[in-house]
Image 1: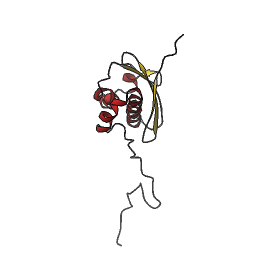
Image 2 (image 1 turned 135 degrees about the vertical axis):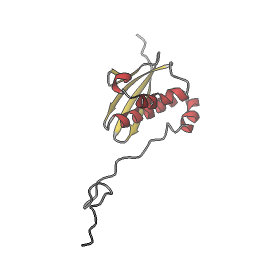
Image 3 (image 1 turned 120 degrees about the vertical axis):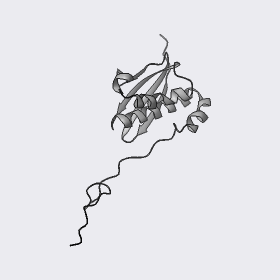
Image 4 (image 1 turned 30 degrees about the vertical axis):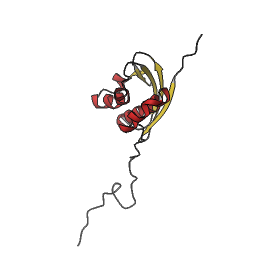
Length: 131
């Protein structure tokens, strides 16, 4: 029995962490044992997930098996895209400049700012009254 090889990549966005395995195949993407079309009903999230495969013309070459935890739908979609991009670089080093040029290898470090004492939210202050 031959062991099937795969390429591994970890992607992060907000508080989401996606562990991606790329296997050679027909292009199906399974997220937490569910097809990604069911997990991500909005077209915008699907487009974000497929972007690394689209810019490298590898849309039908790889199957992706993804385990993702944390954050919400949007953060998870960004994490999956980041993980797929990293796994693609391990699969083929020549794809790195294209992915880097499209900003898919850079971890998006924007996270929610913490609430400060005396404020209603991170920056919103109570209304000022003079008298």
